[in-house]
Image (cartoon, rainbow, N blue to C red; front, side):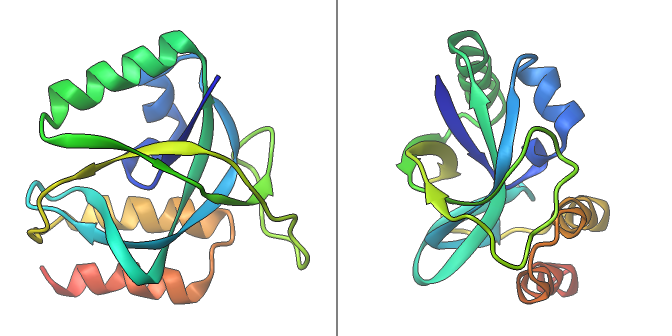
Length: 156
């Protein structure tokens, strides 16, 4: 079993399941010491940062889904690297219809994510940023983080 931390378009369940049909949504997580950015391709990326955190969805993948995800990532983003991370799972759930409780159970797990080696900023479409924001708002991610993502709209 593999654990995947998604912070971009893979947070959308129908998109994730088009790549990994057996993926199981495991909850909402946060990876500390990384910051969100839009890369030169106009897509979500995460880069190391001592003072930031990035929110996303945590998925369980079987071997077949893991292989599909690796193939998709390699074909779509040939310069991505697969890295380990230890997201703190803020909300565990059986599906994407979750919201934060006042006293969430914090657990962590070893997971992986993809990121670009480039640190160049890019521009995302308004629709792309709003899609990410809507996914995170739907599960109750903090307004501070949502505001941080909205800053990428003003870069347009």
